[in-house]
Length: 291
View (cartoon, rainbow, N blue to C red):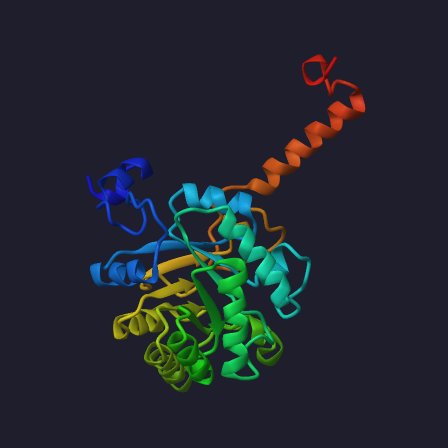
């Protein structure tokens, strides 16, 4: 029987103690741990998180890296895109996730408008996330065009996760959320972007909505880990927005999403049961009352 056919708990118990996922680490995951996992050929999961409660659940489940994504704009703040999300909102959400966790490396997005002006602007806002929220790293979108900002942040001691391929903050320029890297010219640009962010000092790079074959080529060409989302199975790690992963999102979800639960249905059933009992007078009962 191979490891993939074992129950999750048994798989976890047979992983090395220093594994990024399923190990017995009793401290925060670091960027050095992430680099070592790449060297070992170890795959690992990443989820988004936006509050202390759910972040704590994912931390207890052993997810080694949590992303406080500006995707909070879509799935928690009611925006149509990530563009309106502000630095103050990212600081607040990131601080909550840090407080709710003990072991995960917390990476926070730099939102739209917080780093595009100059590398100095990027450093100022990244410093806020480290000092005020306590995160362990930041993420920003863009390849060659953001290499100078990545380099300055890394030189200043700020770990940076890059993000190339589909960059949601550029939704208006892209005209939506199309797959990136199709065609020779686009594929060559994606490879240049990947090598540029590595050369600038990024410790990892997210590849979003990229053909699987191209993502595998990028992964093989880099010394830093790739984190795929809609980029096939050849990446070093995989990330999903937690509300998509857990079935909280209503309506159509992207093709690359796998729903591991249907929490929207569970939560709706609980709310309806509560409503019926209140309307019918059976809640609160004697056991829920004080005298």
